[in-house]
Image 1 (tube, rainbow, N blue to C red):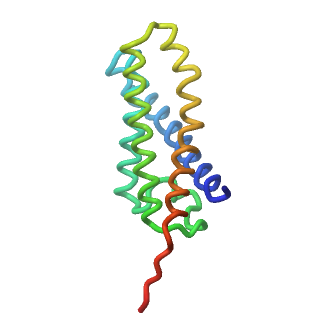
Image 2: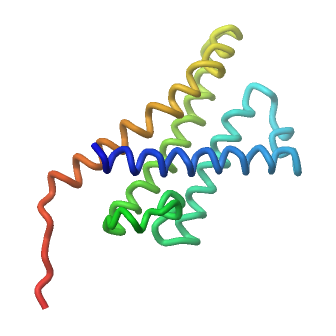
Image 3: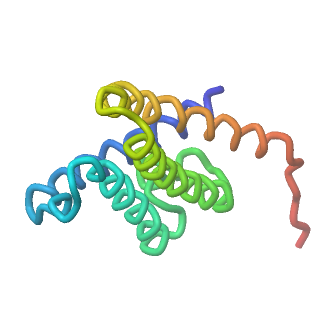
Length: 146
């Protein structure tokens, strides 16, 4: 449970940082102006997914590791998987936004943006992190003999 919460707050901190950077980039270059207002959230989440992908190229353990990740002493494999899960999470947010805008009324779209996206931002990372930790805990630790 402690490890799950430790990874969760690091991931949430990375998400908050990315949202702030994305908002700053939006004010500087207005990249959301390229699409209609209905598709702006999808573009925004896609850009954040791309940032998680690029962060994996810049730092081998990804963005969440940068927030005191060394203190957790997890294998690089766990950090890589977490970064892939974060990338996938933002792609799911983008695709969900597109599906909701294409298949629902304006009122439901507004409710999704107001309640659905924040709940997904808070809840889904906890779910996939706890699953990641359960998978890690179920695997026996291998020792390397020299």
